Length: 438
Image (cartoon, rainbow, N blue to C red; front, top):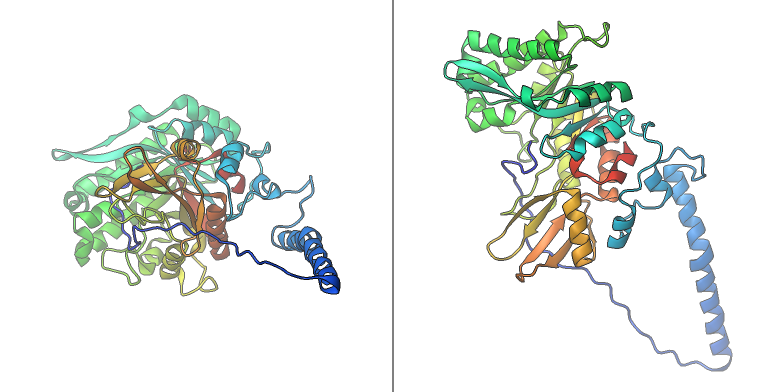
């Protein structure tokens, strides 16, 4: 779950064409009464466009989003009319830093987990500024590694105690650092002493540092090692997760004596319409639900440099939720509250020529591209994402996919319809006004 993910899958075409709307010119020849009727009709049409249509639009907007008065509790971006498909690049440049003054009120009703990375310091500041909008904060600090026949938990050097202290003063978001299991899986899972040692190291670090639990990432690495293709090893992997969750639940939080330490587990989305042996499926979700407090679903990185396209097509996100929870948003939602749907706050700048290439970009880089190339943003309806095309100084063509207010709004609507939470990778790469939704 780094800024530039290890693997991306996609079937999107790397050829994008701009849609241009043409206008037809009609030559009208009319005299006398016909001419007067034409002018009268033009006036009626003008009045409809100028008066009636805006009024209808206002009614529709109020039905969907509620009142738009100055005292409205709607997010700032809705009140300003910024959430739309036909967005201009200059509007993004002018508005992206204008988040609501009220940073304490929450708009999203379910859990929100935010990742923070050491290599992007902006995330630390945003976590403090918008602390009240998050229920869980996960700084990317730790790795559990094999060192000969031993296990070591590395990452204490990343910890910022001053930042933790500031967080505690500003809000009540739970602090769950991410731990990546890099230890050799066959030793870790197959040897009882190693398994117990790994769990002891993680629990001890939580107790010593006063954390509220951990976010654990291991599934994709176990799949890469072939562990999940073997039924016996797969079962051991599930038992390890369950045992770690139970061990954390046996420890009381140092901040709240009525609360135990939590475990959030990271899972990748299925790679196709049907679940494979190495995919995390609904039976795994059900089997771990009693020991795991949340599942961070990595519904991003759908496309990559060799298959350019959208970052997280909305239909793919919906399909992932259906595979894990049921056949439709009206299906069984008994475990939906434990899913944290992945929302990317980064984008991609893909090279469409010269052998392909490109990669992830942050909000700062995205704004620089808007300033430099002044592009026409296009809305891709099938994926529910904005993108634009440009040609660089070496005459290479690029396609840039980066989150927009509209694309984020649609994904939050989807998650909300299931009763699911959110997990944001990662907040330091986004634009300030994205946080108005949360």
